[in-house]
Structure formats: structure tokens, C-alpha cells
Length: 234
Image 1 (cartoon, rainbow, N blue to C red):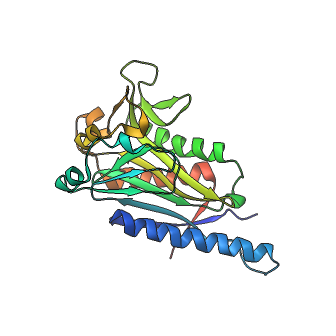
Image 2 (cartoon, helix red, strand yellow):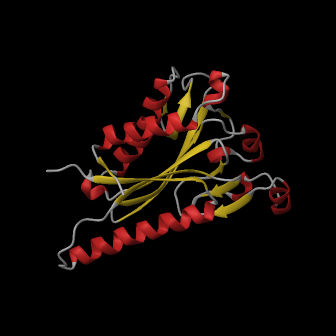
Image 3 (cartoon, rainbow, N blue to C red):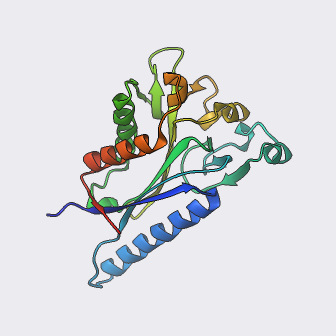
């Protein structure tokens, strides 16, 4: 069996709503294709995508999130040149902004494995493996989705947040990986609803600005290795 194909799309710095609309388009196309196949149409399986981007300052909150975890009024959000969206992923509130690498996998898991728990662990592992390439040790905390530095210590701090949606084994949304992120914006929220743990970035941990392109190249290879796909070139 040939490996599944995944198209890599790098949107650069892109408005959150625009990226969300692109996700929704590919997500719907995949689900519609799966329904048509189930109804007997002879079609190839849905296309898979790995979308990489950065966003202007934005706070997003998932379906189960509590709005009180945003510690700013709507006027204060605007004064910080940020925006706010309620979205259809799991998880609570988080921040996206320049210097943070956002990865949105639109994958038909029927082509890989049908296990959302395994999928989430693979997302985390891609980040853990990437950080290791820069000499940063990271790990998980039981019951707390994401990737953490010094996870067993009181000084545990989150370097990557995750929130996903899936339907008919098609995924959307994904990870927010702090590379050169302005961490001050996290002080205006209770990140992911967790009020007793800090947030960090590669820049803060290493003490230097990090090459975003280098991180992107590495994490694509980690996704490729973990999920077992081949890159489809346009």
C-alpha cells in the first residue's frame, strides 16, 4: 500500500478568520467526499493537508471554554490590537500571535488510524521531537493536553497548546507552538483554563531568537515520520 499523501500549505502571517475559513473548506470537502464514497461513488479518498501559519494577535476559546478566562473587556482586547473568536474546537482559551507557529492538520484519519487519543499524542510527540533537536527537553503532564517544560516540577510551563475538532475521522484545528511569541499576551487570559502553571517559548528557554523556518522544516519532517505519509507537491 502506498503511503497517504499530504499537501503542505504555508500561509505565513494570516488573519485568524481567513485561516479558519480555509480549514473549514478543506474539512467540508473531505467529509463530503467520504459521504459520497459511502454512498457508492467511485472516488479517490479525501485529500490531506498540513497548514502552517502565524496569526496577528488573537484570543480563541473552544466549545467548553469559559469566557471569564479572558481577563479583558472587548474594548481592552481592541486596545491591544487583538481580536477574539469563539470557535468549534475542543479546549479552553488560548492566544495566537506573531512568533507562534500554528499547525492545522486536515487529515482523514481513515487513511492513518482511527484513534483520536493516539492522534493527540502524535501531535504532542511531533513538538517534543522538534524541541529535542534544539536541546530542549519536554514532556506531557497526565490529564493536561499539550507539551510542557519541567513537567514534574512546580516550575512546569507550557510551550505548546492543542485543540482539535474531528468529524467522520477528519480533523481540523491543531497546535499553537510558542517559538518567538510575545508571552505578555498570555497574562490577559487563564491559558487553557489552567491558572497555576506558566507559559514559555523556545526564545525564552534558549535566550535567543529562533529561526522559524528551521522549526517549520523540522516539525514537518516529524509529522511525516510519525504519521507515515509522503508529501504531495502542488
